Amino acid sequence: MAMEQTSFTRDDLLACARGELFGPGNAQLPEPPMLMMDRITDISEDRGLHGKGHVVAEFDITPDLWFFACHFPGNPIMPGCLGLDGLWQLTGFNLGWRGWQGRGYALGVGEVKLTGMVRPDRRMLTYKVDFTKAVQTRRLTMGVADGIVEADGEVIYQVKDMKVALSES
Image (cartoon, rainbow, N blue to C red; front, side, top):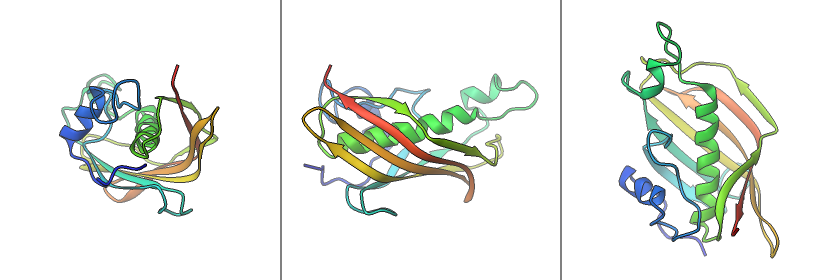
């Protein structure tokens, strides 16, 4: 059964990272600096583009973020893989939010298109994850979703067929 709460603050996300939101052994976000969002603004199990669930989250961009200092010196850019990881994080969060049990892990992604960059002058990333499939059987708990990342309203990353599973082992 899904949680009633449909938005989450940074403090809520940090509680999830500590394993307190969904309980021990269940879906968990990484701690900073790998936590790639500051808040979740909306989540569902039956809305979104395909009516199978969605997540919308935001990440505040500031020039002092850890990755700008090292990627690349003199030409700071957020690594594209971190945006992809943020989408995976949100996909797994949605599975835990649904009340499904197990620890999350990424299984893969079908297609990734990077059409823009996150530089220190950007202000905010918006992640949008739309589930195409959410499966819970005796042997398999998995979400399949498409996602986009917007930087200040401009779509810069698009992914198709992200897969995240939950495993109790």
